[in-house]
Image (cartoon, rainbow, N blue to C red; front, top):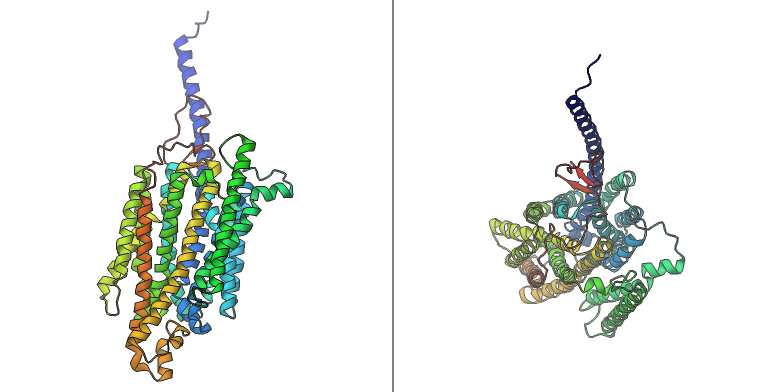
Amino acid sequence: MSEAPNPPDLVASGEKTALQVNTDAASIEDQDSNKKAQQVIIIVLAIYLAAFLVALDQTIIGVAIPKITDQFKSIPDIAWYGSAYFLTSTALQPSYGRIYKILNVKWSFLAAVGIFEIGSLICGVAPSSTVLIIGRAVAGIGVAGIFSGALVIISMTVPLPKRPLVFGVYGVVWGVSSIVGPLLGGAFTDGPSWRWCFYINLPVGGVSMVVVLLVLHLPSNNQDRKLSFSRFAQELDLIGASLLIPAVICLILALQWGGNAYAWGSSQIIGLFVGFALLILLFAASQIYISWQDEKKAGIKKSTTATLPPSILKKRTIWSAGLFAFFFSGGFFLLVYYVPIYFQSVRGSSAMTAGLQVLPFMLATVVSSIMVGAMVTAAGYYTPFLIGSTAIAAIGSGLITLYDVNISTAKWIGYQIVVGAGIGAGLQIPMTAVQTVLKPEDIPVGTAAVMFFQTLGGAIFLAVGQSVFQNGLQAGIYAYAPEVNPSAILNAGATEMRHVLATLGQLDQLDGVIKAYMNGLRDTYRVSLALMLAAFVTTLFVEWKSVKKSDVLSNDDTTIVSHVKKPQSTYPLGSHSRVLTV
């Protein structure tokens, strides 16, 4: 008679089989997770490429502006090269928040990149300053969508605790492009033509579009719903957009023309300011009414169709982050545009040399952005870093006001490092703050709201800076070179003053004109300092929240890229967690 099987052997055999099944299942799970993680990483890299495109466009033009003004003979248009860009990107920023909430995120993002490419092409072939300004305005329309879309896509693919690091690298992308931009701009301007500063966007943008088209796959955001035109118009808030866009245009035109094309007390400028006030009041009323209607229908205190819902704006972190972005970006872009002018006009540097001379600023921005992004990810709390970085940026801006005709090399390099370190550290933190306090479905609108204030600050204060610069330059000419006609200098390019003076037989007035330029630039740098100080005040109102202890379950609808070990589970096929291991 055969012996009965030994029960312990069966148990042991059974345990071995169960462990083997669980191990095999875990292996399959790991492979699937790793594959998805790789896809997410590629997506993030594609977003970085698009960000690089936009940042390159914003920084490459700085060193080219003097040559552009030389060719078109129009110093008064300097601010328009930036303001036209910021005007459209600002006015349309809130609308893109609605677009990304109700339409297909992927195709909306691709459309934005495509519009930016068209604008760049117009700039590249522009036969006049006016056409160049139009091209910048078209590019700005695309930029509004690229900015918002990049941040929305990150929020849909990366978990909240990892976003500070991702945003930090996002800042690095900006910093790298800020380094490459002036160098390329200088090389193109001194070499083939300044027009290549815009042509370069075409192949870079094309690569970005192809990668996003082939790789990016996002979960549905209800974009497949069948909407009637009236419902679509309501969800897009076309009424709000029709009020906000002309309001922003009126404001920018008033600031741009005031004191230049028209006197501040002229009927044209007063009319523009009155138009802005009326339109912005109507816009605010429309947002309150729409929110009231939405809340009445839904029975909750939350608007679903307003462009800038009061329920979101009244959150302390949102309005304080918005004000911070408004002042901080204004101060930052004044430096981006007017520091290269210092080197090319006052010190007589070529465009290429000027690009090298602003490297300390850009390198400091890169290094500090990486460091602070990593530190926020590790610590969780972002507010202390925001306060500290803004204080450093304010100190650095103050040092920049000390620039003079005969400043030593060590000082102009050191001052740039200080301000760059502060700006790089603080530039991306507001987005981390916004995405920490908002629910996933509110992130597109909240992000667009803060981006609106950021681009509005750039648009407004570039116009203000231009007015301050021209007034300071003119006053300086009267003081230091009274024999020179101010119009001759104002209508010449920033690097052409030496040629103009030689043509007029007034080279003996060169030192006085250089001092006049320095007078105008220093006044502009003081505006940047004031803005950084205002930004510092706003940081004191930002809530102390941690990305590790958010009150909002921001990871429910995201694909998570993490360095944690795979979740422990007793189920053969693992848990339902969507954490991806890399």
